[in-house]
Length: 385
Image (cartoon, rainbow, N blue to C red; front, side):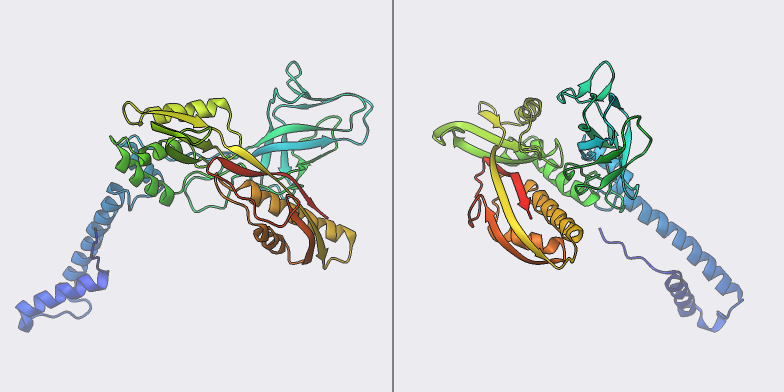
């Protein structure tokens, strides 16, 4: 829908032209005249009505709605925006004197050096240092450091044009204790956090809504894909028809989905959720299976020549390159191959201090690493010196 709008001056000119055309000998439109005052009043009221019309159009169409208005419009069809996810990872709590036991309590807050990102310690029963009774991570006497799990306090922004708040940070960025912890002196994150993301944007939501409408009451491949992507913005998948997963032998009436939630190793609960979502839209009498991706591990090694004149400067550049390479590889989606030359480009782009790269190998060689529609590539180690 296209609405032709007019400014105050255009409305007033149209009013004057109409009146003058009907009674040109009786009209006086100088400033302060009665007819000009009437025309200006009509123009102001017309602008107000025009504004109301534009507002109504903006709120009654998904194409022109934004933010909460777009959410409420799509909610009429049972369609919701994909929510943000706070970044999480492990941080190292350390101390200078390790003579007595110390406890890092659940709920403790740490933050980045500039204070822009805060993270909270959460319970993690898979961590052997976590003590349920003490509700915290225990550093026994003699231990100088320990790893604890944290999650971002702010899960990310909504669709507003705000800075990224997903909590994805580089290694070594967390450096401050928000409040003191007895027996703890320092904190740091040895690895980058890369699993956070903001809420679905208005544009992405509109695109997905169109696909959603196209799949209603249709047992199609697109409907199955829409059911999977509705589970989260980080979900990727491949669908294969009429073949078995194990050996790709023919199997008519069967299909399988390989699904990744961004981790490369989705848990069984996630796979069950995907299965139920597909089951709700699958074709009648068809059978299917849901499988996690097969990890394709890669090992990267490279030596940098930098313009830094100090060992500290060279070490900082090495850390930047290592983080950039690791983040890129771990962001590859299901079925996406890894280019050998692409990593060298990322290394140069990570810092202007990088002058040259030597001894660069990918899985011990100089070839690309392919990935099938069942595989996702993740790093085993990245060694940059």
